[in-house]
Length: 339
Image 1 (tube, rainbow, N blue to C red):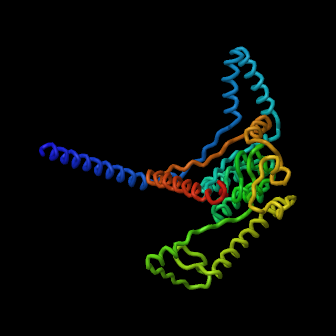
Image 2 (cartoon, helix red, strand yellow; image 1 turned 135 degrees about the vertical axis):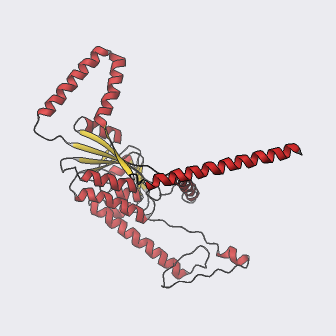
């Protein structure tokens, strides 16, 4: 039994060490919080320089240093000629929006748009690489409002969709002056979906009463545990139809050539099909378009970087895992698709 006592003592020491370490981490975190560090910073990368570095590396390996010197000389001559020009060069600002159900990237987008609009002119252009299958109505409504700020400021807006812009994602994409879609990108799904399980029968089976009190006739329509009524279902469906009408009106406002009635069915279209249905204006990947712009303008990738606290990182990871689990579960009821 002596070994058991020694083992218990070891566990006690280990637990004490872990608790002490956690307390130190908590104290350091609290001190850093008090210093009031900046919430985030703006990261700006000149993509022209990035491409030049990659091309130089490849040219040196394939053609040799002599050819690289010639290339540098030609590039310097071009830069010198541009410097003599009295015209301000066109600037293209590239943003990335990878949307989840909650449109979490909205927080970065709003800061990026605010910063760019302080310096951008009607001669410039903003390109958003957008990837989203949609999500919460209010979240994507606000995300779309950030892009309308660009249109209202008179700065040309281009949206590039390499994979998917559906539902709330397409609500954002339709605001652009020009929508570019990759050959197999999915666009559309102009519809609204909501679903909720109901456990009322299970509760009744086990003689469990559930009471819910409300003030207001439609404060609750469908519930998880209460007995849903036909009147409640009708009101819930009415709300969905109203959101759908608002969605269609929004798309029609920014895509007047689009036959909204024909595409507002909750379906998606791929690449050329999206182009034929006026959901997109051109077939092109974001890489193709940005590479083209690099030869015509100064191109800057802008990203607002937020330094998160440890507890936020942990909670964010858990939240992302739950979102992915929810998507997987819901997809089983939508033929492997959930927009």
